[in-house]
Image (cartoon, rainbow, N blue to C red):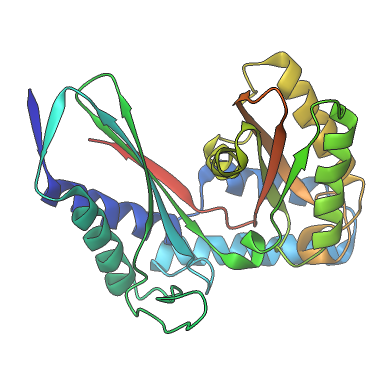
Amino acid sequence: MRTVDSKLIAGVVKELFIKANTCLRPDILSALKSARKNETISKAIYALDVIIKNALIAKNKMLAICQDTGMAVVYLKIGQSLTIKGDLKKAVSKGVALAYKEGYFRNSTVNDPLIRKNTNTNLPPIIYTDIVLGNKINIKVVAKGFGCENMSETRMFRPTDSVSNIEEFIVSTVKDAGSKPCPPIYIGIGIGGTLDKAVALSKEAIFRPLGRRNKDKRISTIEDRILGKVNKLGIGPVGVGGKTTAMGVSILTYPTHIAGLPVAVNISCHATRTVEATI
């Protein structure tokens, strides 16, 4: 039985959040550069140039990509053939707190949704855990800003609703969001499960690297169709118009009830900040 010290977990979480907030994902940066090459509208070209330059400065100087350094969300896949020495939840929280302190990142978490007093630590994080085979721990983190989070939507469809109904809802969500989520965006979609499961899936969907095809050809076809429709909206980078409103669409599905069809749309901005590591 392998033992993992919670201090190691805290250290890894800290480094992941620092990296997520300062180093834009390579696939996102590549997609932005491709959008820049394909763009023809001068304002959109300028906007993409600024976004790309900003990402490079952030990485070189270890500065936050965006002033909204997000709410901390952590996904843990824990191998059942290991034990953890110490308090796992406290270790994750310590890692988050250290990252936001040492990285000089903005603390954006309030202690109560109504009283709204800042915790000044960016705690507590949101933690999802899953028990899997093996003796390792996979840690995925996302620093989720609320300019894009606020534009996300859910809808409980009827089982008789068509795929075209779902696609219309997703495209309409992006259209209504306009420039607010700081496009070009990455659209995560969760379909199935319960209301809460669909939402969780929609956020986890943005971890998939851009350009990696969905293994289910039926789903990948839907993703392509949605992406095409969204980019025809003409919202463009930061809303100035152009060819690229979204860089990609990623769908995760889960079995659901015979009487339900939950669909969640999680919009992520051009600074999609996710990173992972395995211990």
